[in-house]
Image (cartoon, rainbow, N blue to C red; front, side, top):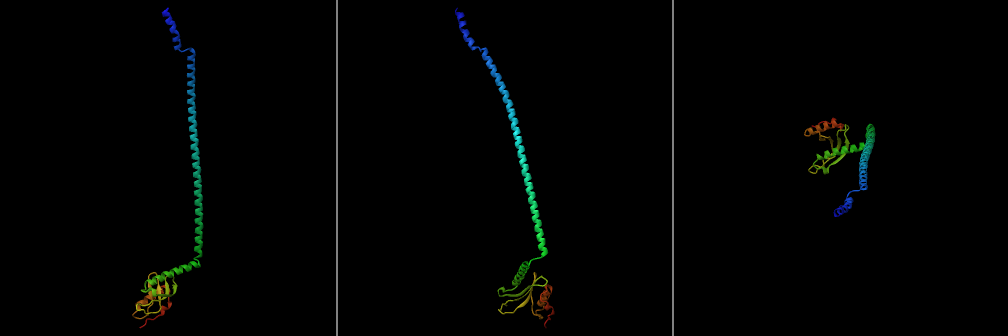
Length: 211
């Protein structure tokens, strides 16, 4: 009886430790649901990945389209700017041609003449030892437009006033008129040549050399 009782007493404990049929069904059902859930998650991940790829492609296409629009706009703006510059250059060239055909204005001629006379006068001053005492008058451009005809007076070192002398000034030489004597013959001939080359003082051709 003790042995049987022991066996009988142990049986309920053993039965409690063994899984019941209902527990096995629940476990199997949960496993099936878990597998189904895993399957759906994988499919969802694939769909999400495909959707992400599609979105990235759409974004890339949109960016490429915007870049292409920007490029076309830049090209159009550059073309318009080039056309405007070409038009302005053509207008400027026509204006220059018109001004050149019309010749310099009176104001421009006067300004050019004044600048040329100033340049020749400065050259004359550089050849005089006492430029402070110099007086210059009757300054005119030479008839051949290659020099200046003028008269000047500058005190000598001794303080004497020699009076006004005629002078021809060119880009290369300042030639002062000296008396046509034998002592000053070289200087007189140089002045005669300068006068002839520039057209200044045509009367000098008729001057005779003094004995």
